[in-house]
Image (cartoon, rainbow, N blue to C red):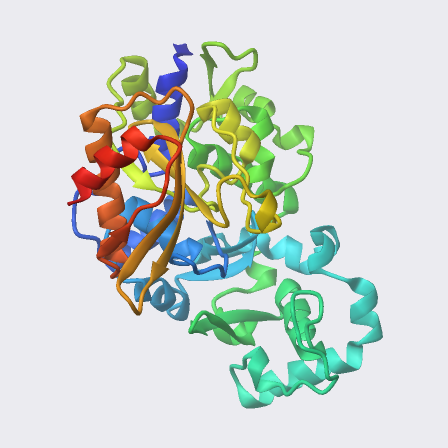
Length: 404
């Protein structure tokens, strides 16, 4: 089997729920289905526009209630843990991550054994506090060391909570104003029993590789480990090995030397792609932490889109802006915009908008982009749209007319 690159993109978009525009009014169950489809929904707190997990869901569902994500967490239908990074995950996948909790040494800075050993008494105090008083936030513990906080200056109780979270002793029971509220694992997820439910680590990792290929739709072997940050894959769980066992399909992509892998659940979509009948029609604004672009190397190889999040770059060195959002249009990533939602004023400010080189501008192109921006702004409840300068003044003038 041989696929064109454009058909491979279409298969990838179909697997990610980004092939076609949302076709119905979303319900809470659709939020859960979308998380299951992606297998992981990355969490990030930056909120110049909607925080990333809510934005990723909007890209696929259109208008929906942000509160549904919080409700699903409180209902125990999803949980939080380290996956690609900190992620919301389907609760039925809890067992796939249990080995990391039991043996978290491979999680890098997220688990510091020496700090845990030196602060065992402090960690136990936090553990006992939750046991006695129930669900707790970091804010419930008064800071006593005089420091101001910040990523690397967490108060000891916050660090203790994170250690207990990483080792699986506590889980995030719910969030309030996006702040985590922790409780003991046996109270948040009482259905789980290690002795009854825990599978071998190789079984779990095999399932994760299969999940990654399914979520990607089509994957080079080099893309697979990054999806759940699995590190170097053992030969037993390498896609090539799983394909030989009949657990994955293989296909050739024009211009690629390596074979690509496809999950059997996508067999019907693969046939449509082979027949040239899988057509991308969606135009959506994406989060920088969308699975479509979170692997920057994959974004280059599949979409020829070179992307860097510049919020960690000094302002004077930024090229595209603090929090530039990729723009997906009909199977191609055609540009990026740096935006800010001024919610109190009802203003959606586009600080910069850049199109990719050699982008063909047509009236249909402009209408698609304008419709996506308008929908995005209205979802933020910021109906007034302010446009910036652009690397294409012609496009900007057309866009201004289309948005009126």
